Image 1 (cartoon, rainbow, N blue to C red):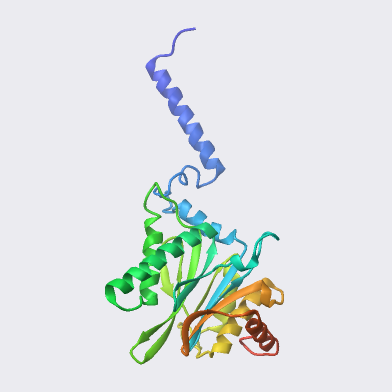
Image 2 (cartoon, rainbow, N blue to C red):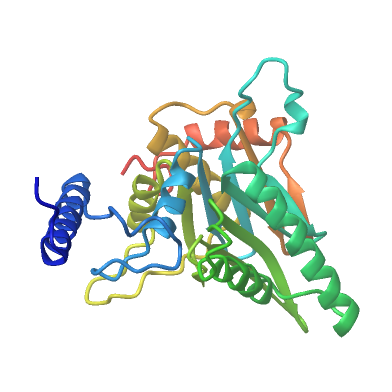
Length: 288
């Protein structure tokens, strides 16, 4: 057989490339654009960042944060994946400073690495400035770190969402703060928010409790007491899971005006709040 001329070889190579491109496109629109974190798809999407959001949901946990008039609460499911584990060593709640804490939802090793960096950040801030780091600035630093992980090909996004709570003391004024930070490096303050497997359902529940008045697009800011704040978070989680909660199935931490420390609620305290919630029949209980 006669050898192929250079033009025929080039035509064959081009045909194979076209066929390969068509095969990749047939496998899905993300084909070829999810190999590296730094490559945008033609639609302007970063698929690896989107996959990080999906990794949060694969944890199977749902977390809720609610801000009240004088307190904030974070609440999450408590699952011990192995009977041989010590249950006391399994947690998604972490204190960053004595008065600021957060709940991590997603990949646990990523969460612990992020907590270590945030503790260093908070300690460095206090050493340099002489006062505790504000909650908003800590959230900003967490978001800055997460955003850097979306820029470099030798890194991957963190598969975690964090809900941060604390109370900023501004002179005589004490301001409850609730922030959420995601793998894309976006952070913002919330009246109430959620993260995890049932995030959308939980947000829908919370939006109904904070719905704006007629003729307004701005959600109301109800002056929830400490008990109402905790019970709203419990009602939200109970509603989206579709089952009655037990004190041993959840973990919750709070900060309050009269006790600024990031404090874990005991099983007895949770049981008391669950009993009070069961006796309610109003908007907070979700039985309207």
